[in-house]
Image (cartoon, rainbow, N blue to C red; front, top):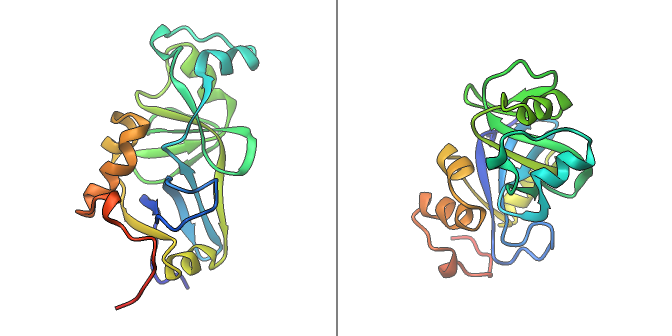
Length: 186
């Protein structure tokens, strides 16, 4: 049985994190249960814009304000697959409802709706996701690889990517620059 549930929490990589996929990352946990966890890295834009992505999948993108929005690296698992983190709404075919305000959709119908200007108001499109097997995330937390804090929709959808990690740290009352890369227990 799961002792704690980090669904709808941010994971903040500790300074000692050397894994290049997660160093200085902010990950939003979309699901955490006794079988493992999955999340989306939310502060790693890549050089692919939504207009380029939509051109690659042969879909029109009519809202011009979205053309230059950057796609993000969501994590090292299934990097050839798109994931759309969004505010709730819409009858998408394949949505994981994180809570009553946020969903994660993997079906193409959400991209069609976005291209037609009918998609969710707030969204973050990623390639790939982060995944942990049963007990793995709990062990990484015990090893001081991550800090966790309840997530904020404002940080997810309103702030630019480079401001998300410091803003999540501020929720804990900590400045990232003051963290030590040495782990310890009191």
